[in-house]
Every structure is written in C-alpha cells, then in structure tokens.
Length: 90
Image (tube, rainbow, N blue to C red; front, side, top):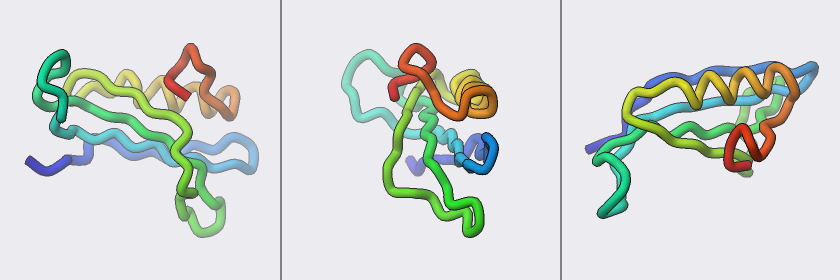
C-alpha cells in the first residue's frame, strides 16, 4: 500500500524555517509494529524557496493516524528551534 499524507506543517523559529511531515506507511518489520504506522520527519528549509535540506535530523513514529509526535515536534521547534533527544530521536 502507498504511503498516505496525514499532516504537514511549516514551523518558524526566528528566521529558521522547519518542515514537519507525518505519513501513514507500511511497516517492514515482521514483529513489533502494526502493519501501518504514522512516521514523522523534520527537515530544515530554506526560508525563501521552502526547499528542504537533504539532512533529516529527527524522526519519530506511533500508531496509524496519530498526531501526537507531529504536534510535539512542532511545539519543540517553535519553542526552542530544536528537538532535544528526550523529545525525539535526533
């Protein structure tokens, strides 16, 4: 099954722009995760072109359609301009 978009957000911290994306995707693991789960990724973006930089600096996942990780990433970026290790996997 194809990945499906759940939510996408742009978050500003001063002059720095971040792109946060959550999708539902299939798990490649045989055990542990549900067959589909929500994966959230964060990129730094160019503020003028909104082009994402290649380096992904944080990922998190949860049950299908969950937005908790997405909102927590947005909150941390808006508040601190970064995601601490205790906030995510970055």
